[in-house]
Structures are given as structure tokens and as C-alpha cells.
Amino acid sequence: MNPHQDHTPDPPAGERHHLPAAVPPAPHGPTQARGRRRRATLLAAAVDLLTEGGFAAVTHRAVAHRANLPLAATTYYFTSRDQLLAEAFAQLVETELTTTRTWITDHGLSALTDQIAAADRTRQLGLWELYVHAGRDPVLQQIARRWADGCVRIVAETLHLPETDTRVRLLYTTLSALWLEQVVEQRPLDEARTLLTLAVTTAKNALPPP
Image (tube, rainbow, N blue to C red):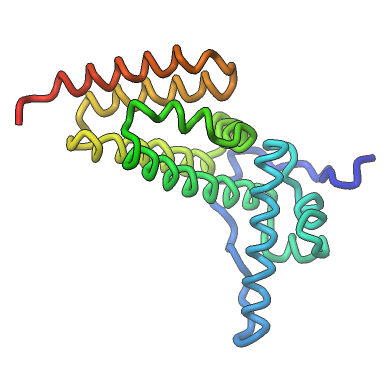
């Protein structure tokens, strides 16, 4: 038996519409600070495991082992595996949005394929794996939408268009498809770069004159 594997069955997806309370009430002072540090350490361990091994790697037992903390600490701060996954996914999404915004600001939309190619592929696989799994989980779906909406917002700001503009949505759709292809299939980067450059040029040419 794998000592890091949690065999507790997950509840049906339909019963997981809301995350449980994030942290039980904690005393004030040094004990509270220690609790925050422990929780942050556990969440960082969950993110690492998700990055390295995907959805199946994140269990209470594995997270406790990675964080070098007792199993009871993990179940105290994260009352379910669903909560662990959701918070790890949310943290990865926020990191990815910040990275994407910075890259586009520095290099432009057409160079985003280079950022995707340079990124940690295991982290990207973890993100997309949870994105697809979110179709079966309402809580994860909310986080997946936050990721998509954040990407749309970045594209809209770059093109100086409203987020509701169809050109923004079309360009984002092209970008996400190329992103997923590159992460999963590892197609030639030159092909993705050419397609994204064409999509960006088409979108910009469709803009009305200033």
C-alpha cells in the first residue's frame, strides 16, 4: 500500500457546492501566527504535489508528508480533499495570471507562445488537468472561470477593448487552444507562434481607426 495515498472516497460531485470553512477559529497571538504558518506550509505542499503529480497526487496524507507536519494538522486546516484541491488550484491560477500579464506587458501578445514554452510544463499540466476536471465540480468551475475571465481581461486591456468585444473572445479562444495543444501535445512551437501572430494581427486589423 502506498503510504502517501488517501483511500477515503470522495463525496459525489453534486454534494460539493460550497467549500467548508477555511480555518477553524484560532486563538490570538503567537498560536494564531503559528497556525497561519502551518496552513501556508500545507497549501504550498499541496501546490507542489499538484504541480508534480496532478490531481491524484493531492491527498491529506501526501500533503502532510510533504509539509513534514502531522496528518491531523492537514485535516484541521483543510476539512476535505476538495478544499485542498480548490485552494491549490486557486493559487496556481493567480500565479499564472500574474505571470501572463507581466509577460504580455514586456513582450506583447504575439510572444506569449514563448512564455508558454518557457514555463514549467508540469505546472501547466496540473493547471489544465484541474481546468478539465472542473467540469465535474462546481467549486473548481468557479476557479476555472476566474482563470478564463482573467485571461480575457488581460487580452482586452492589451487591445484597449471592452472584455465583451467578440474580437477579444476570439483571440482568447485561439490563445487557449494553442496553449493547451502546446502543453499536452507539444507540437512545434514555430507553428503555434505563426498561428498566434496571425490571430493577433487579424484582431488588430479589425480594430476601428483611432
